[in-house]
Length: 67
Image (cartoon, rainbow, N blue to C red):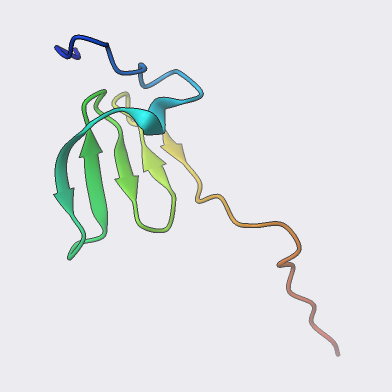
């Protein structure tokens, strides 16, 4: 898929987010990478095969409710 001299990581790679940008739409909150991955501003991802990766939230943000 990637035509760059140094190929971008595949969509299945752990470092898939380091692929080059093909389209960037910050006004809509998403970017398309060379490997077909769509990145969302909330850190969620949509892979080319239709699988989604949930947004990565920093630890320690659990919400506690009381009665």
